[in-house]
Length: 168
Image 1 (cartoon, rainbow, N blue to C red):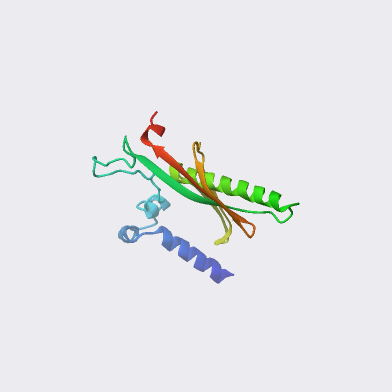
Image 2 (cartoon, one colour; image 1 turned 90 degrees about the horizontal axis):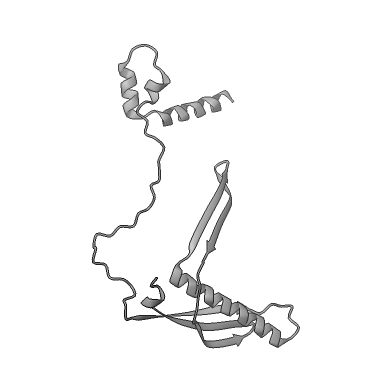
């Protein structure tokens, strides 16, 4: 027990002192204060916000004034096991596939927000949570093709967007 406390104290003390601090402590005579021993330790690491900058001010936009961009996605939906008829299974799988396709279009156009959180206890990850979310309005998307095979429905959907759709 004594040895483990001494080792913990030693490691915490060596972590607090930098090489420059140790050299300055050796130069002094007599007892030193905490402020003298810890004076040159840098502040905790601060994370600065990420700022996107570009060196080239002549960056061309992805979508120019007179151009259109075609986005095509394939959404998938699975039929639930407890359906009363094959028609109900098809309808529910198609509905899920269309919702998945809309989500994929929104992700491509607006991007995805990702929030993560980790709970660490005793130097081990106890719980890790990742949440993704998308907020967008999708209009004028067209279903190109629908296939249903072995309980899986796939819906191919596409949307054409232009610069005017984003003009305010």
